[in-house]
Amino acid sequence: MNRDYPDKKRRSRQVIIFILKIVVSGLLIWSEVQFEEFYALTPGSNRTRSFPSQMVVAAYTFLIPSIFFSIIRYAFIAIYNARNANRAVRGNFVLGMNRLTAVANAICAVIAMMIFFGINPLEFVTSLTIVAMAIAVTFRDYITNMISGLIIMFSDQLSIGDRIRVGNQQGRIIDITLANIVFQDEEDDMVMVPNNMVFTSTLTNHSAHPSSLFAVKFELPLHIALEVEQLENALRESLQAHPNLEAGEEMELKVVEIGKDFVKYRIDLHAVSNSNKLHRRLENEILKEVLKFEQDRTAAKSV
Image (cartoon, rainbow, N blue to C red; front, top):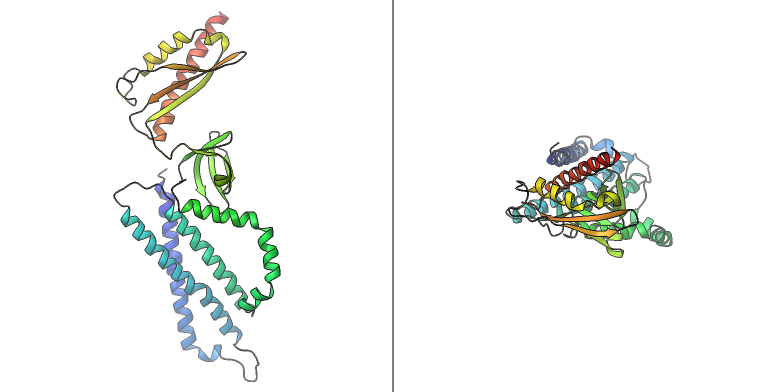
C-alpha cells in the first residue's frame, strides 16, 4: 500500500472538518441575525443571557479559535514545505503542528463546555488553584511526557520511519504521540516508549545518519561453525557481482563471540544506497543462504 495514502486521507478529513467549522459558524451568525427574538432573554429573567444565546457563545468559544488555529497551522506548514521543497528534511514539524493544534482545540473545547453549563472559566480556575496544583502533581509524568513529545516533534532527533534501539528492543517508529513513541519491532509487535526516555535513557537512532554500510549478524552451532571457510566461500560466491552491493565489495566473515556450543558472526557490507528497505532485503538474502548452508551440513552429518 502507498505510504502517502493515509496522509492524503488525513489531510482530506482535516479540510472537510475545517469547512464544516466555517459553515456552522456562518449558520450560527445567520441564525442570530434572523431569529433575534429567539435568543433574547425572557422578560423578568435575572440571567445575563438566555440559554440559546449561551449555547451560541459556547459554540463561538470553540469554533472561532479553532478556525484561527487551523489557518495558522495551514500557513506555517505551507511556509515550512515551501522552504524545504528542494531538500530532504528529517523533522516532524507537520506532526508537531498537528499535535499542538489538537491541544489548543482541546483547551478551547473545555472552556466552551464550561460556558455552556454557565460556569465562568476564569472564576473556576482561580477558585480551584489548590485542586489544580494537586492535579498537576498527579499528572506530572503525563505533562512532562507531553512536553518531551512536543520537543521531539519540533526537532530532528527522531522522525517517523526511523529505526531505533531502546534497551534490548529495536524497531521502526510508526507514530509519535504526546505520551509516547510507538515503534514496530522485528516481530511486528507494537512497542510504546514514554517520551521522557528519549532524554533520560540511552536510545540509538540507526537512521539519524543514513549510510550505505549495513551489518548482518547470525550465529551457528559449534559443530557447523567448524566449517566456516566453506560458509564464507559459499557466501562470497552468492554475493559476488550482486547488483545491490557496491562493485568490488570484499566480504569478510568476522567472529564476534564464541560460546559453549555456538559461534556468533558478523558481516559488514556496503549497499548501492542507504535505503533501510534495501538493507533489510539484502540481510534476508544472506540469512537465507546461511540457513541453507546449515541445513545442508546438518543433513550431510545425519547420513
